Length: 321
Image (tube, rainbow, N blue to C red; front, side, top):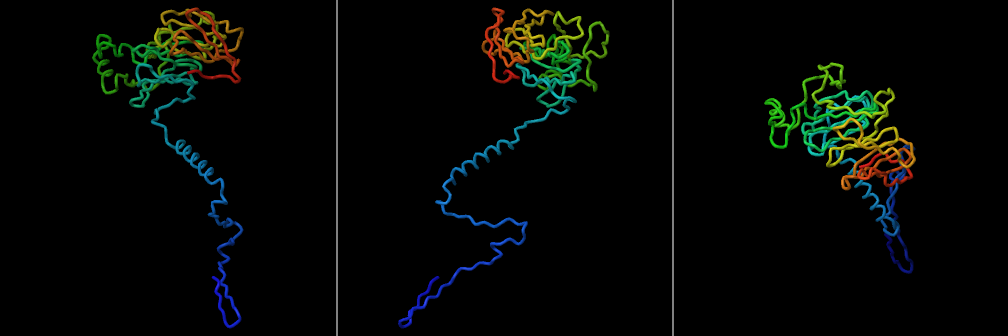
């Protein structure tokens, strides 16, 4: 404050200056941070609103990242990395996963437990898909050149559409399939994985009640030790058909009642690259799409058994949904 005092013809002025301790502005050691004072004048911060908006967006993103979207964990996971996964289209409980070590595991989402562990293939399981029926049939393909049909429910223990535990299941099967587990088969008592049935081997004690019910191979590789590896498989949305993609640069259409492909698309626009992914169109159900290693995406029509169009992408596609 400034105080003026008039005494005669002399004017004296007394000034009081603000003083603060040096400890409030200086550091006690060289390792401390320098103390700064914020200027609250809005004219000195023209980008204040932009910075606050950026901070709000970042905070919202962090909240979503740490929002814990994981709903549950399937206990008793695979020993090796998981290479394929399939969910049943008619039932929400069964889930099948395949691993690089060639094993298949059937899961029950209601109890989040493993039902059975199957030694399905001798090499990596490259694809798993469910059928469109209520019997729980699913198909797996592997790099060993084999396609195998399995069943989620054990033999003669699945629920029919007309009754719960009718003629197709005995008393024990009907009680286990119509109980509190939502119609899903219970976990068997075997502690070791089942081995796949080899025809003519006579190993009845190692045969799993889940299958395989049938084994499919390409005619050119049945007697060949270097079988063409399958990389993808998908089932039709309404008909009893499934399609596969193999390393022989071909897309094969299969009927479960036949051992040979009913149709093959081998001339993929002059490309000999491996087909990695194949999918049915859920809307136009006669169209098949595939991805190949040459960065191409092709379309096929099973009504005319011809290839329609191919598009070359700038980068390789690894999935189709």
